[in-house]
Length: 540
Image (cartoon, rainbow, N blue to C red):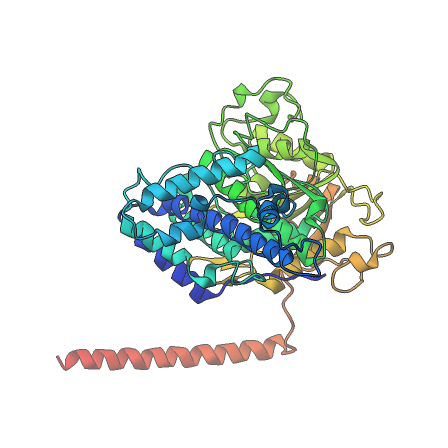
């Protein structure tokens, strides 16, 4: 499988973070994104307008082009024709809403007013064609504590040619900047902010596991839209067309939803993302998605299940038997299952406690999910993958595509694959672990080899075309009976066993003699050092 990823230059990132720190004192760290990302969005939108306008001008002056004309009035008509831009998902941006205008006026004392006015103009311009984008650029600069000098510094930073898509047309510069700041700001907010940022390597693992080539993609806790963006990257890496995917999302926080809309608009993606609490205010009651990729908030307590209607179609059974106010983890599971299409698959990041919880409202759901063949695979994740929360996590893969009737995947009913990645990953810093390319390939290749039908579609089995085999300490395909015997606990460690230790060929007796000799030598060295230290004490 062709898998690739774009890795941002470290120095590039450091410069961006230092620049953001110029806002210190006037803006809290967890609010940096509210000021920087809208400016990045405005820059992107206005640059695309400028590039499209330049493209039309060249055609108007090219004698070989159908656009060619020397008539100045006709040229102006074409240059001002909205359809010439909308056909390329570009909008005509009034001058005072362009980034060039802000750059030219950055040193003016009223720059904060000019930025807010630019936001207003751009917001109205976008909403005229995309009503769903209305309100994504609120007036925030005038009422902020930022000085005119700080705002000018921010604009000048973003004016750097390195950050220009116009200057670097083949590079996703602004997308990279956007993703970098989203991650950094999530880290600054910390776990207490109530929102969890999903690191890039985890997002990529989720997408690579379930392979969203085409169809409806849903994220009921979509945050800033990272799952959708990675789905697009997956599609592009495999030669797919973004026109073949439809994006649906729901987010509880208005500010985060605005960032999500900006992020998706930057990628020219069509989408339907709505505001609301997915647990109690399902904004897509009739949606059936082919892929659900989601990292919902873990262990949400006091979420008020009593407010659910008794006949809520998401519930597997009576409300008092299949919910608990102490934890919403399995209400999320029921929500995702409800929203899967007949052939749908979901990849869900979940707290480790969900694999073993004995609370009635949780265990009842987990037991039914196992009995009804809803669970396809469980992946235990290592620690320190999430900077914003220390809660150990895992991945649940749920699927309605386990009967083997699609000609691609084999029949897997009565089986669950367990993968333990607790020893994988590389420490990028003292606090953060990441999955590298090899890690992601190993995990996804294992799942795909187990899931795919090697006889009917051998090219879809990653790596070799051999059938899946259990690997001690890493993966195990358990039967329903085996899971039942473990009281429906889904912790991979229960099933995968210990990793096999390679035999070095040295007989036990010989190895024991060597160890005893080494230990005696260490004891003797310890005695020598103790006497030497005591002798030094006596000199004082």
